[in-house]
Length: 116
Image (cartoon, rainbow, N blue to C red):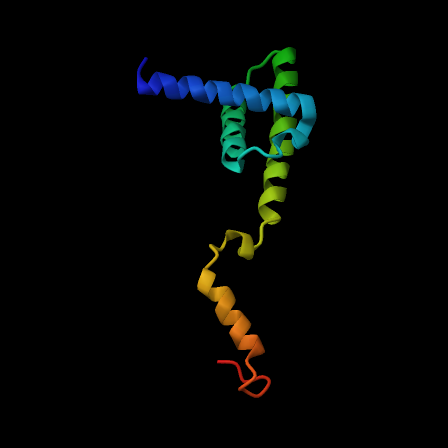
């Protein structure tokens, strides 16, 4: 099996797992899942909706409407997760920074308010 075929198989399995989690638990099923995987799955749903076309039967229109609702819900979940992150969460910790901040605020040889 080629690398490309293995990657496709892995992606298909991943999407099926995310689909099962979503249909069983709703948004809560994504907790603990990498946001990048959920975003990739959302993108595949958006492409699926785009590719449905315009001349649809009633059943296809209902499926398209359901897909739109899922896309809206999953997009809301992702926006909520991203908005919940702060700059501190995104910043890489520097071990020397904590020591420097501690010294700056609690230095007794300087007058209060005279930080470096």
